Amino acid sequence: MISTLHTAEVIETISRRTGVAKKKPKCVIDYKTHMHGVDTADHYLANYTFIRKTVKWPKKVFFYFLQCCLFNSYVTFSKNDTNSRKSFLDFMSDITENLIHTTDAVSSPSSSDGSQGSSRTPAPTPTKRTPKNDPPWQA
Image (cartoon, rainbow, N blue to C red; front, side):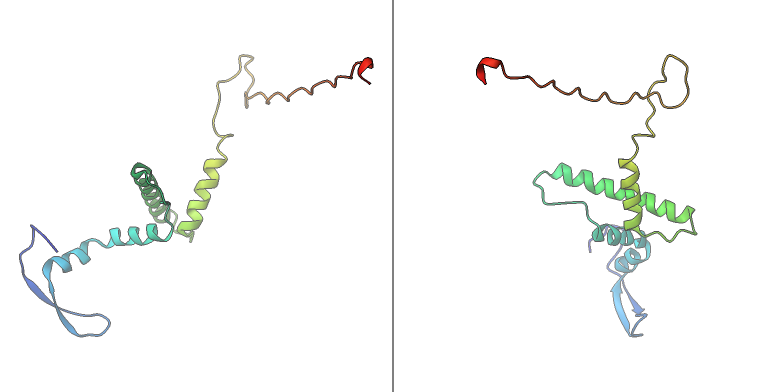
């Protein structure tokens, strides 16, 4: 590792699993101590990746940032709703369904008659074309 903060100091640590003493650089120990959240985020994002095969790097960056935003909102949701045991995949599915079905949540300007409720007018149904009879001389 390259670090401008640390020297080449080596510290002896004891492994939790085996109990064997190992010598490690201090920069590695500091990294493992302070970067736990980043490793967790990378772990979650690697399991459910949005990035597909594409030549356009801006698309990859956009979808990576979108997925980072979803993960941050999942962490916030999990901390605020301690009773929920929702997985990250379920959380993403719920968000996706809510984004698809937001047409009812978008409010349009209220109608001029002052009525409350949805001011949306139903889409007009297309009129059926009247059948044309063949002229009698072509029969």
